[in-house]
Each structure stands twice: as structure tokens, then as C-alpha cells.
Length: 140
Image 1: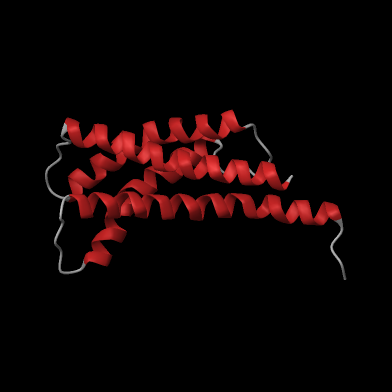
Image 2: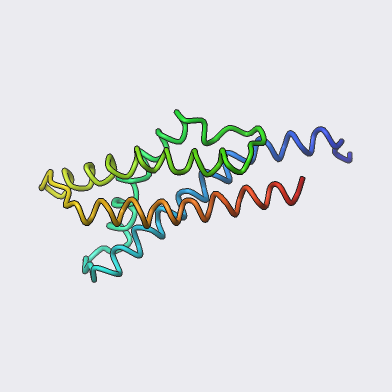
């Protein structure tokens, strides 16, 4: 049985939050991977460290994105996608850095680390979210 146009749109809308979430996780993994490579982090279990460190940022990011409406499935203007990503990261980055800091036993966040985290993370998330929004707009 062939899907009706309304059903196709409904299926795409249901998948949008899942795709956004998966893409966000990939971007956060990339963000942490770049940071670990840049700082020459040596760990006997590098994959585990990558996943755990990513989780410190992914948890507050996901909560902030959910609370701000970043995973809604209805179409939104490009400006809204950018605003949600920036606002979510401004909340999530300091919380993620704090979680990471406490987990590493320090409880201190160095200002340069936080600034780089805010800038690099925001850039990566914005590029991803912008690409996704443009792809959706192109398909519509």
C-alpha cells in the first residue's frame, strides 16, 4: 500500500526530533574528540573516556534543548533553529563543564576552557542545526 502525502509528512515530522537528537550527539562526540586530540589526552580506554566526557555535555544539552523546544517536530524558521541552539548551548556548556570538573575531582572550571567550550561547541552545533534546517527547507 502506498503512503498518502499526509502520512509521509507525518512520518518525516516524527523522525525530525530523532534525527536532531542523533545529530546533536554526533556533534558533541566530535566536539569532545577534537578537544581530547587538541590536548593530547592519553587514556588507556580512550573510547570510554570519549563517551563519558561526551555524556557530561550531552545530558545538560539534551535537557536544555527539550525545555527550550529544540526537539519539536513542527517546521520552524531558520532563525528559531539558530536561537534554540545558541540558547541551549549557553545553558548546557557551563553545566557540562561543571559536571566534567566535578567528575574529575576538581570542581573548578578555568575561564579559557569555558570560553573555548562555548565558542567551539556553539559553532559545531550551529553548523549542524543550520545544515539540518536548510535540508528540511530544501525538501519542503
